[in-house]
Image 1 (cartoon, rainbow, N blue to C red):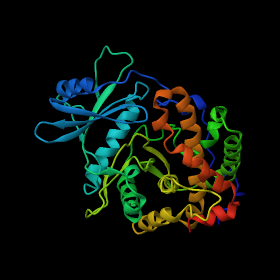
Image 2 (cartoon, rainbow, N blue to C red):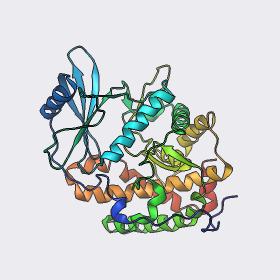
Image 3 (tube, rainbow, N blue to C red):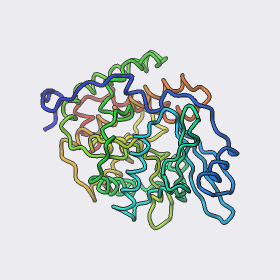
Image 4 (cartoon, helix red, strand yellow):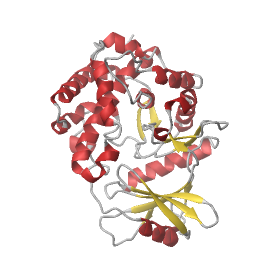
Length: 364
């Protein structure tokens, strides 16, 4: 049985340097492209013309392209800090899923006129940026839907099916170091300096201590390449349709990590946004439905099931740390960066009001 005192020497791994952890475009600034720029890129690289609409994003430029004949696409122009290897990982993962599980609603990656899937904008451009074009998936992002319209069971089903589709995927860069992979939470301690409120700093300190207690058990969990970002902005829903999930987007955090971390990320992203840690609310009421759907298509050990609530706590803490830091770096994008951080403090406060065993059993 999983306990916080399991031996830390079973499946050890080397420590991660914080500089490597915070790479991948998280701290790189760049000049935002506008709709005119987006259309010029789609005409030149893809031979497509139409109208462009900007999407709010974390660290790149993303546009919907509407063509004259009614077709729609998504143009993504990379952050200068994103490497060729990680962009190739994302594209390769999406193409693998399209082949292994063509029924899953994953965007299709479309080549440029020259046949490449990741196309440099200009050889002389510094810093270097690249373009990718995806098929557009109709529907509404979860963060725009009323909670009552969300099929949490269906989300869990799709997550399990996506994991199964990715189980056989391999890539030379799959073991990259990623700040949003919560197995590295302990390496984010330096970001505590960007948490302003004393209460919040205290909650983060407790979260680090609790993660240290469960980290040894996490190290021995089954692993594979996973999506790692099944959040409200990356799931497109179609209420009333034959399948609720009509889109799985943004493979930017794809990485080889514990399967339990992937599930915990999805669980955490079902926590109610209007939540009061002192009220009679159930933090996991929607997450349990997601887990039911997941377990209809995949298995988790009892140890993993008891670990997942703690990993959800770790993801809340990681989000608070990373978004507070990035909001300081990019104040012009603060509203988007912190959109889920503020309600997350109440989620974190709930965890610290409950002991280890209560948290272990919360999802069950």
